Amino acid sequence: MEEIKKTGAESKATSFWKGVKAEFSKIIWPTTETLTKQSIAVVTITVITAALIAVIDRGLQYGINFVIR
Image (cartoon, rainbow, N blue to C red; front, top):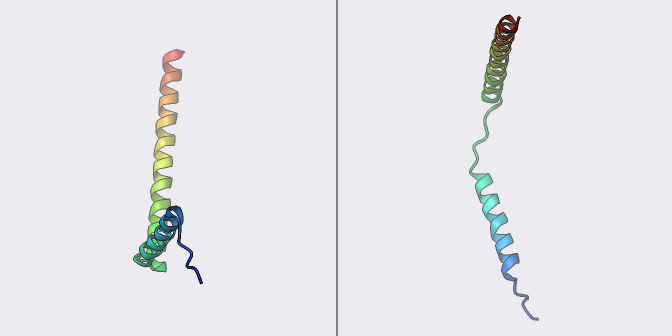
């Protein structure tokens, strides 16, 4: 029986996916507790930043309207 040789592209694709699988096995996934704490931190910082931008926007809007009138 003849052995079918892989073309260069097939060999590269196979090698790529083997590398991907190897890298995924190195991932250390966070625990539920860590994920929850980090998610709360991200949401909190996002809300604070949005509020700060809104306050600055209102202040600038008020200032520009004051100067224009």
